[in-house]
Every structure is written in C-alpha cells, then in structure tokens.
Length: 256
Image (cartoon, rainbow, N blue to C red; front, side):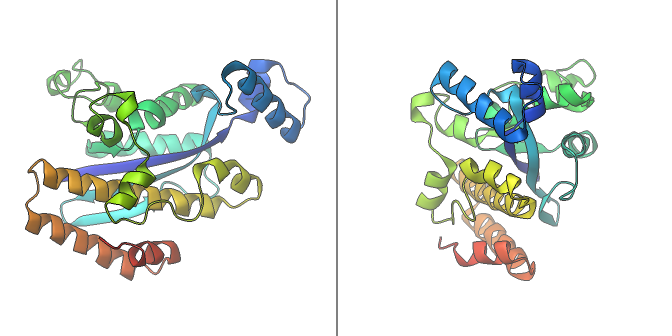
C-alpha cells in the first residue's frame, strides 16, 4: 500500500479579491465583506470561486510499507506556497495513490489554481504519459483513473444527486465524523489566529477519509476482513500513542 489521503482548508483570498474586484484600499474586514456581497449577488452563496480560495492547511494520512503517519504539511508559519510545494514534492518523490473526499470537485482544482498563482512546478502530477508511458493509462488527472481515488465521486457513481458529505458517511460507519470545528468556521478561526485548531480539524477529516477508504477497500475485495481489522487496530494504536489530544479524542469517539 502506498496511499496519501489528503484534505485542504481554505479561506477567502483577500489580496486576490482586491485585484479581481478592484477593492484596493479596503481593510481586510471590508474586503471580506465586499467579496461576500459580490459572491452572494453572483450565486446566492458567499462561498468564493475556487481560484479565490487561499489554502491555510493541508493535512494527510500516509500509509506505505510499515509506515503510518497523520500530520499537517509544514508548520503554523508556513506560507501557502510552501504548503503547496510540499504537497507536490511528496507526489514527485513517492508517486502515491491519492485518496480524497471531493478532491476532484474542490481540493485538487484549488491546488491547481493556487499552484499556478505561486509558480509551483509539479511535473509528475501533471504527467499524462508524456514522460512516463504508464501515466497515459493511469494518471492523477483523469476522473476514471485510480491514481487519484475521489471516494465521494466514485461511491456516488459520478452522479451529483447521489453524493453525500463526509461527516454523514463517516458517522454512519461508526467513525467520529466532524470534530473541533466545521469548514464554515475556518475563516473565523484563522482571523482569531487559531491555525493549530484548523490543522487539528483538518487532520481529523483525513482520518475519517482514510477509515472510509479502508471500508471501501474491504467492500471491493482489496482487503480481507482480517487485513482490514488489523489496519484499523494499527491506526488506533498510533492515535493512542500519539500524545496529541485531538488524535486521542478521535480514537475515543471511534465506535465502529
């Protein structure tokens, strides 16, 4: 197994909003309000277009050989560019299978736009067979290839009306679901300087996604029941021994 489960957290890109909408001279608070009003008039929602989503956290579960890790890339002071570079450098180095929940509809497109903004190179990720012939038939970009598994998209048979939130599916399966905060509260937490809280929350999301992925692998026969249960126990042991309150709490709330 060489799997990299990922999730991102974003806030409105205020500097980008100033450039796109001509809001020069406004304070951060007034810029945010103006962007919300513009977006609400466009779509009925305050949720910004994907290019105007600034990444403030990328968290991951990495499982390869005997290694299991859950962490957030960079540190609390890392710039958006550094977080994105670390994400793509990991792909360049390890060529893992990417696993996400709605990664095809949100996380990866946001990463694309923001990588382009910062001039981040990601040759391995963008390869569709030009450099590695195997990538013609299985790459990160095709919706129906398996080098990136978007669990939400695949389980819904690529039908928007059949999709479900991660929190609903994880909770249904006996996993903790949302912990610490909700995605709608990330901007508020960022304004309060609670970057650690955002990173901790993002880490619990990737743990939920990994556990759903294990159940998916059991369902499609890639894991036996014994292998699935052993993998779950490995995760439990790691969380208990981590000494990190949010991970210990996650294990305690895991009832499956």
